[in-house]
Amino acid sequence: MDRKQKQAEKARPYGLLKPAALGKIPGRFQLHQEALPHLPVPPLQQTLDRYLLALQPIISEEELNHTQELVAEFRKPGGVGERLQKGLERRAKKTDNWLSDWWLKTAYLEYRLPVVVHSSPGVVLPKQDFQDRQGQLRFAAKLIEGILDFKTMIDNETLPVEYMGGKPLCMNQYYQILSSCRIPGPKRDSIVNYAKGKKQSRHITVVHNFQFFELDVYNSDGSPLTTDQLFIQLEKIWNTSLQTNKEPVGILTTNHRNSWAKAYNNLLKDKTNKESVRTIEKSICTICLDAPMPRVSDDIYKSRVAAQMLHGGGSRWNSGNRWFDKTLQFIIAEDGSCGLVYEHAPAEGPPIVALLDHIVEYTKKPELVRSPMIPLPMPKKLRFNITPEIKSDIEKAKQNLNIMVEDLDVIVLVFHQFGKNYPKSEKISPDAFIQLALQLAYYRMYGHSCATYESASLRMFRLGRTDTIRSTSIESHKFVQSMDSPDKSDQEKADLLRRATQAHKEYTNMAIQGNAIDRHLLGLKLQAIEDLVSIPELFMDTAYAVAMHFNLSTSQVPAKTDCVMCFGPVVPDGYGICYNPMGEHINFAISAFNSCADTNAARMAHYLEKALLDMRSLLQSAPKSKL
Image (cartoon, rainbow, N blue to C red):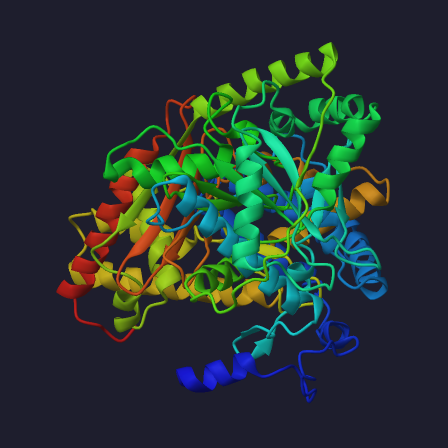
């Protein structure tokens, strides 16, 4: 299918519905959703066989033998595996998606580490060319207008349906990201969504100098404010918050979830505080007008911005200028750096990036309408009454956050030597090529392969979220072992490289069709917990712990905009690596913890660059052979 056909395919409304003149087609989104297939429960034997294959490159032979015995026990006819499998199949018949609720709870809402660094991804957008407050506010106004333009498509259900391989994708995540917020709870958090129902949110929250404002973004006739009107309102906010707030209430959202839940209940005892917090939670999104960061050299500028997007730089800088529980926070600093941070529970990266692509394009449009100069009401400042107890909670949150900020090392690497067009010219999937380079970099650094997580979208299915592409395979392991071996010819190495990329592509296809192993194994384990039977030994085994300890946690988040997403490692001795492959270059964001002596983001960046170049030279020196 050529590009034009693809675009036509993308733009075509789902099914035979003709879009009414921008009006809402009743239930169009619902009709689309209901036509999507349900997530399958993979066959038990298939998952167990593939689990053993996935373990081979990452555990010893002795451990593998032990696990093979446990798997044999688990898969016996009429045994525990079969009982749990039947339970899962029953669950799949009764629900829209057997996995989605469980996944939301276990991966996000019951996860107790702070959302900052440990869960919420950031996005670094290209630097804007403004250098002052006027430019910052003008850009922020334009950006808000772009968000509202996207919101109109969501409200009217006129968002073009996305396709993957000719199949329509679940669009549900788009309907969860605006007007939503996470709420801390003592053992499990929850999410509120104010996008539905009669009283839809009409305001956004703007934060400047740690002070929060409610900004109504619609006129009384329901039309969105224009850029000019928004600019005037943002200026009013700026001028009434020239001094930083002594008590940055927002910093409480950076704490461990249990501590924050206690502080939250404390905070809400006061009526004024409760109203202010509810206003933030109900807002469409948050706009953070940040103070400029200290100037740094160009080569580390992007890395510094990535850290800003993830955590705000600590209590001395912009971390108090956030409400990290808010699903979407757009960050615009006075020096032209900008991006966003989002709370991960409602959505994956791709819908967020699609929204960003739309907004960035929108900000480039010339302003067409001059706005009517009707005097607008003053945006409302949100007040907080700070008791000694709340003050002490804020101080503790500051200390914990500053330790986290010091501990996170994040590097943005723009790899300029080639982009996705090079592997394509070799008939290799760019994603598989990059993943193999990560395997090679890791192997050269540590002398062994490790469990690697790459997220695969399950959006072909109703309410689908993600499964895991396990990039470490028997084939990738053979390739990385051979790469620096004098015993192998370039031709043999190149053949192993091609085989490994092919294996990766096959695993990816299997994963997006609902046949990967990770969520199925998790489902069997959660089914055992739900049935109140003892947890099978298979899940108490060391090999299972090794398989779930992802030293490399990776994600490809492609965008039209020259941006890059970033996130923290998921284990103390691991790396978080996100990449956006552009035509002629690749943007990487690599994170690691300084507290781990074994990991180093700059070293990983160096080895990754070398791996990409070595793999290219290898392919250039060895002609394609018939595999």
